[in-house]
Length: 431
View 1 (cartoon, rainbow, N blue to C red):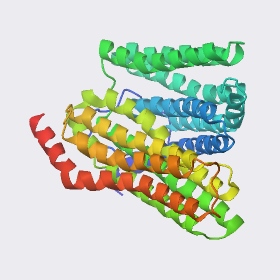
View 2: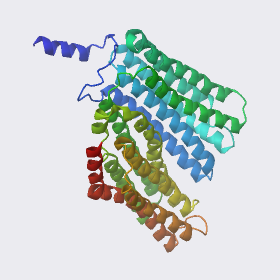
View 3: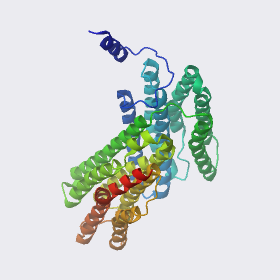
View 4: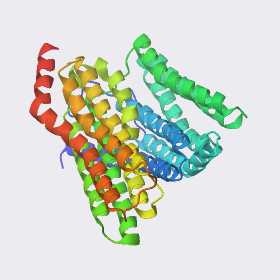
């Protein structure tokens, strides 16, 4: 065995403490590590748990509080993931301490998941979605990251001010989240405080890096990390589809509605995957890394919207099984998150290309048209109350609504393949 192979195996098999001076931001071909993939899986489970709670509360008729609790939960989970991903791209060395602290963060995610039902129930009863169990989980998720940032500050003197600032930002934000859970504030004040905290956490890191210098994060690595979480979240849509239809068929057997739901769920997941990867994120970010800040924030609503597509499919299955949800509620539960994903993909393209190509507007309109049609059909056909599949007209309307929602994502893919790629090439040439 030659010395080079021996050294490589020693690094891969023995995870002792290693220096943390910062990674090479220009390193080409850097890929996601197995530790990062394991970390991502835990967060996708959290997305799925939040989507399941959303579907349950929507089915119970608590639409507005359920959406509020879902937005709160998804932001908390996504922001924690993004913060660690930012760190690992700049300083991840896969040594023993990084591995242990990453696993501790995963334990925090699990604790937070157990707090989601309490948060959603509290919101449905007119209270705050924030609760002690969520806060404990979030603290366990984020305190290890403070330790890692301080370690980077000690071992990378050139970026000490920035890495120390990141640690301080997390500590202050955590104190804020804790206070909103323990202080007896009115619901309105709590919501305002949570929104202010969220905005402050998003703005502060950008200000810090632009003022004191960029950290050694790798744009290509970050593009892959975000794309992989998108991919795994789409897998949650498929899992939600299968779970919902399995419960439905166990109760009622296979039906036209069950076939339509499972087919549409698979089409939606595949088409949204196709559309997302038509945006050349890695190629552009490696050439224009300064565009990454707006690009990464565009993913915050998109991850939540992708998971909510699975919630919409659960709502459709519960409507078929229980017959207590209107066709309009089903249409909105599916059309709104799909529309959000479509819009965010178009916005992501504009952010990357620094282009506002008006020729994309007709394509965006064509993508959204089937979603509007689905809501209109549901409003007309489902105006009389809960869905009743014994009524032939309701069955046809349900099939039509779900098919129209799936069609929107197909239109986006076909449009990009036929026309959109030309706009991308033209924008790159003019950049």
